[in-house]
Amino acid sequence: MKSMKLKTTLIALSLTALTLPAFAQMPPKDPAATPGIDKRLNKQDKRIEQGEKSGALTPREAGRLEKREAKTEADLAAAKSDGKVTGQERKGLHQELNKDSRAIHRQKHDRQHDLNHNGKLDRGHRRLP
Image (cartoon, rainbow, N blue to C red; front, side, top):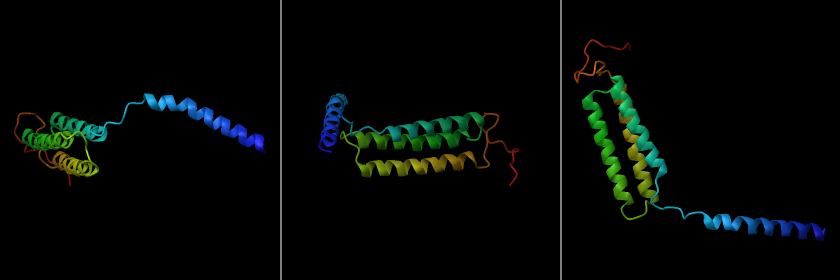
């Protein structure tokens, strides 16, 4: 029994000794890093571009959505300016991104289209209710 505990303790110590150098080499976590927010901004930008290409968004709608996205990016830059993005700032940015996402969806699925990409609304195109 005693030798079993000794072996277990020795194995645990040796594993700890082997893993400590790996943790020591890991770079410190950046408090201003926002990979989730950056990913969402990128994805929403692609949704706007796709809507423009397909004609689901008119140039005016796309311009408004891009303006909202620019405001979100400015808010992100302001949050990062002090070198740390707090939890409250992250929450606010995610709420803003949620609103932007809903706006993109609403604008892409309304009855305004520019399928021929001439900058004018297509009047004859109607969807069934």
